[in-house]
Amino acid sequence: MKPRDMSAPLMSRQEKIITGFWPWFLQRVSGFLLIFLVGVHIWMTHFSGLGDVVRGHQEELVLFEIVKQRLAQGLFIFIDFSLLALVLYHGLNGMRNILLEWGPAARHAAGMTAGLWLLGVGTFIYGAWALLAFIL
Amino acid sequence: MAFSLRALSLHAGNFQDRYSGTRSGWWAWFLQRLTGVALVGYLFLHIAVISTARAGADTFDTVLIILQKPFFVVLDLFLIAAVLYHALNGVRVLLFDAGIAIKQQALLFWVCMLLTAVITGVAGYFSLPLIFRE
Figure 1: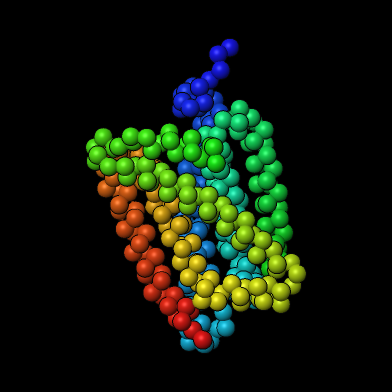
Figure 2: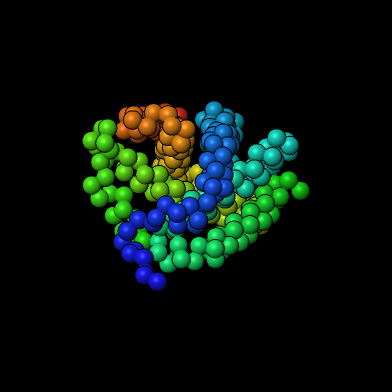
């Protein structure tokens, strides 16, 4: 079998096999949802309490008690856990897309994908454990 | 570095947009990847910082008070700029996926850059009291 020229772009059929429809589709769905979730997160952590800090009613924008009060509301528990899951999927799937342009990673696409899933699930569990400090 | 150089060579070599005659499409692609990788790095740091809450409220507050010093507020503005560009260019890519405005890709790239600069500027303006507080 003739070895593939690694300086040439991946052929469309090969590309279709190693990237796939679902990672492409879910990257776009997660990206679209993240626009709203990250927007709410940045607004809540960087700007919503700005007036109180400037007027001296509040020492800092983010402190343990402030996060605890926010996460006492079910909506923000849903937002923060959804954000954690979606941002990990979107970020690590994006890294996968970049790594697939690297010959050695593309040749071991299944193993690399499994490794990234392991990293993502492990980080989600760690992040959820961290968030639970404010909830329980 | 090998994979990065190969990826760059694939996309940069004589990659001029047929409609605009510029390389804005390559820059849009490159900046999307650059901001994406930077944001993934930040994500892991952010989760590590939040996990200090497991050591107790005092530990969390000590870390967060340091991270809200003026230097870090300025760094946050770079974070906001990276998030904005990545999100806006992401919408640009979604439009192309739907077959919309492909011929206007160069114009849309500059719209993304302009909106990123303007919104980051507004965020910077509102952050001034935090940057210059005693």
